[in-house]
Image (tube, rainbow, N blue to C red; front, side, top):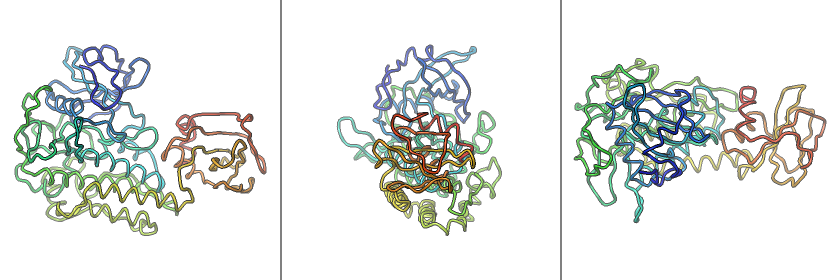
Length: 461
């Protein structure tokens, strides 16, 4: 079976793909097993490896990717699935697009972002979740999908600073016009306890997984697909809803978890005064690193605690608006929470307003970055209106302001290039003068945004 699922590029053949991939390094671990970076025909791919005991979770995720239209820029691009033997053990593989930045959790651990960058992460993650929650009518339409395990570790950061949602092993589907849910396998396990909505935590049907100690991330106890039925990929018959919640209630639980993800993103947002919080998972100061159901139920459901809204956010209109949005996402009552479409539109509007506020109606196609060796400062300008002659300017006194150009501080250049969108090219010059002009024929070094910013990232931050 080929990977012509409507998601990703249909160039991998399921029956033979595992033999053609060279595993290079382990880049992550989770409830299912491991994620490896692999090489397929000279290109990086991500290989999610399940153990044979998690066959049902692998089969469920493979079934969703291969039978549902999931071609969307903010959904992980699926290539193929395969079963192989390695070190004498049967392994189940899901091959997908490789993300060098890793998960949003990993990204926020290592990076500070400005307002524009944070909004881009947030709005693209919302776009992916909105696509999952939405029906598409037609011959090749898609059912609505509830993720059931939204968290920063299941959202990936692409090279251009946008997000893709992955890990659909616990997802449930509902066809247009239907009141029944395809839950895949009968179980009460819903996502990661730290991100569970209060109404989910209040459900007496939830129990600790007996296999809690093996293959789990250090900061989050994750609910495994325990005692799943041997649901094969080609078994498309719906399983009765044993979850105890309606589809709309499960969508609201996704929104609650997404509100926590927004909180994680904007903690790492640098204010105009240069303030930023260290990275933390939600409720890090309220529960243990591996919280029990009892802990989470007490803190979230009984005591009604939510992550703190920072006082420093009050100095920014954007952060005030985003803080209000978070609170509407994690409201105690599911029917009061905003639908993800409204959240997406609000983030889109906030992003547009923030970009307009800094004087750019659109993201520039090109950014010139010039380094002053005397101060080690970098700056850039919007070069779209300059034609074939580029005049570089800096925030330092060594350069003069250029008409039709926008002065950029180092952090703004970083946001434009690395986070907002990769420009078509970035020009870099090690020389400096009072006013420096670079003509098309005098470009000394031309590099892609990702290559240049990998070299300069630590300095710019």
